[in-house]
Length: 208
Image (cartoon, rainbow, N blue to C red; front, side, top):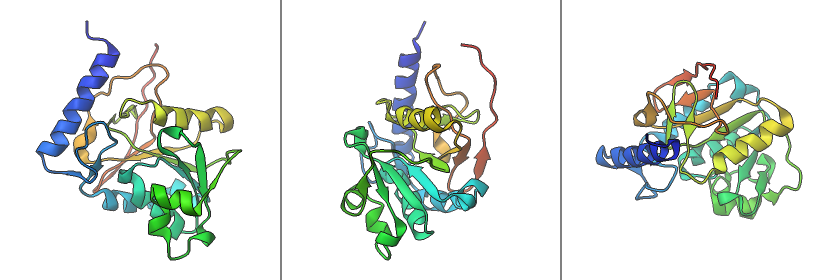
């Protein structure tokens, strides 16, 4: 019997290979070992801004990967406070205030820019919406990251402290799978946003 960990590894490899073979993987390349950037990621980011939760949000939390950079930029351009995880959480979390980066939102939404214009947080505020990246995701909301567990740690830290917060991910259509292998400690998303559609996940009750 194939273990869950092996199923996860195989699915990651399959998706990374598929994105490159279909020519939809984008910088940084190769996409193996990463939350993959994809053709249409900017259009997906623009669709995120149509979510009711986004429109009401004053604070957005986002992962630091390139695929979600446009989401971070749009948050700042719309006057929202951006909380960003540092890569591999090595330096915790950064807070970027929109009034401090007027006309510099694109730069401030990069990792280097966030360190330049943001401040390190000792205490996390409650975000109104969480943006996460993934390698694969299914329509029940189960997400599969790149294997480091950082996305799960980020989401879990906020939900343990503040209870349920809506979670959205931006992906290419090819990253949506029939069923993503998962374990009890894995986290889920509420919305999947591709370059051409918004999917509200339908949760199924599972007993582990």
